Image (cartoon, rainbow, N blue to C red; front, side, top):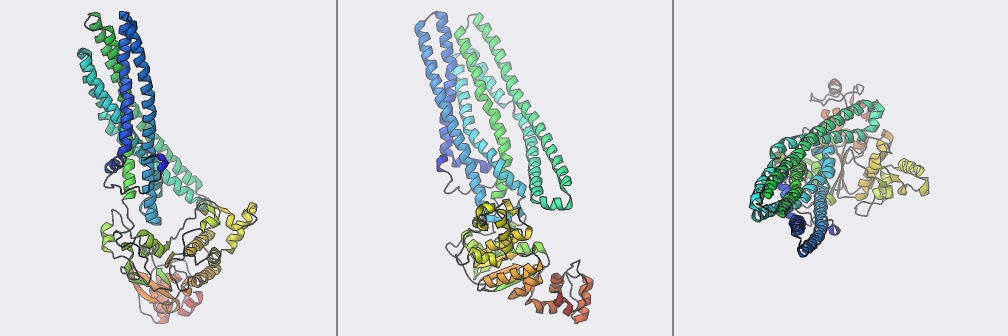
Length: 621
C-alpha cells in the first residue's frame, strides 16, 4: 500500500479483542510494507557494520605501508557510504509510508464507526476520549507500526555483528557478544514503571481535553451565568496535573536513556583497556583492535532502537486499547443479514408497544427525557449496546418497519428508511447551501423545508451577516456548530435539514424545545403539512405540537399506556396531563377531584401555577 493509493477501499475488519491484538492485526495487514522496511533497514545497518572492518583494514595497511590495500579499503568505504545513503533514504521512505498508511487505516476505521453509530457514539464514549483517539492516539499507533520494522532490522544487525566479531576476533568479540544482551535488556525492569507513568499522563491529558471540549461547547451558557472563571480554574488545575504527570514520565524516560548511555560507555572503556593490553602484548594487531572498537561503537546506534520500540509500545498499547473501545461498539446487538432492502410501512417497537402508522404524524410523550432519547435511538435502529448492556440489548427485540427488523437490514438501508434527529443536532461549518445538500429523495426542496421550519428570520439574519454575497443567505457561511446563531435558529436549521432528506420515517426528539410558543405553533403546522402522507414521530411535551399530531402516544416506564388525541388524553389520562401541563402531585389530585377521575400516580413537574379544572387545563394547552 502506497500513500498515493489512500484512502483504503476497505480498511478491513479489525481484531478488537484487546489493544495488543489490534496492533498485531495492523502489522499483519501491512506485512508487505514491513518486509520492505526490514530489507532496507538491514542494508543500512549492515553497511554501517561494514565500516569498522574497512577502517581496520585501512589502519593496518598504513602500518604495513601497503598502498594497494589502502586503496582497496578506501574503495570499500566509498561503496559502503553509497549503500548507507541509499539504505537510509529508502528505510525512511518505507517506514514513514508504514506510519502514514497505518494511521490512515485507523482513522478510516474510526470514521466508519462514527458514521455507523452517529449521535449515539458520544453517549457511549466521552467526547474528549473520541477526540484523543482520532488525533493523538492514531499518531502513537502509527509510530509503533513504523518503529517495528526498524527495530527488527536493528536487532538482526546486532546478532550478525556479534556473531561476526566472535568469529573475527574471539578474545574481544566474545566480550562484546556477551555484553550486548545485557545492554539491550537492562532497561526492562524500568519499563513497567515508565509505562504506568505514561498511562497516567495520557489519562490526565484525556480528562483535560474533555474538560476543554465541554467548556468550549458551553461557553455561551458559562458567560450567561458568569461561570467562566470557575471553569477556567478547573482547566488550569487539570493542566497542571497533566504537566506534573508529564514531568514524572519524562524523568523515568530520562533515566532509561541514561542507562542506555552509561552501560555502553562502561563496555567501551573496558573494551579499550582490555584490547590495548592484548595489543601491547602482541596478541592482536592494532587494526584488529580498531575494527572491534569501531564495531562496538557503531553497535550503539542500533541498540537505541530497543529503547525506541519500548517507548513506542508503551505509548501505543493504551492508545490501541482506547481505539478498540470505540471500534468494538455496534449500532445494534444483531448483525445485518438482509441486503438491498428498504422497507416501508408502520414503524413498530415491540419492546414498548409503540406504533407509528405509516403516513401519520405521531407524537410521543415520555415523562423521562432520557427515556425519550433512548427510545428515539431504538426507532432508528441504534439500540444501546456496550460492555455493560450487551445482554439487555440482545434480549430486546428489534424495531420493525413494515414488518422488517431494522437490525437485519444494512446500515445504509436503515438510514435511508428511518432518520433520527437528535435533541441537540450539530450544524457543521460551511454555507447554508452545503448544510442542506444532503442525501434525499429529491421530493422536498430546500426552500420548502426552510419554510416549514419557519426559518425566515434565520435567512434574513444570514443575509445581513454576509453583504459580500449580494445578500444571498444560501451562500453565507455558518460557523462551527452554528455558534453564531441562537439555539432556536440552530434547531430550526437542523429541522430543515432533516425535512430535506424526506425519509420514509422521520423521528424528531424535541424539535421545538428552543423556540417561542408562536413560532412553535407554526413549526408544528409546517411539519404536519410538509410530511403529509409520510411517517413522522415527534418526541415532545409541548401542547402546541401535540395538538397538531394525528395521534398521541403516552409512554410511561418503558411501556405504552395510552393512545389517543391530545385533548382526549388531557381529559382522561392523569399521567399524560401531569407531563404536558407540568403539574405537581397536589395539582394533579385537585384536577382529578374536580373531574371525577380516579387516583392515578402522576409524574412530578414543578413551576406551573395550579389549575383547578380540566377546562383550565385545556385553555392553557
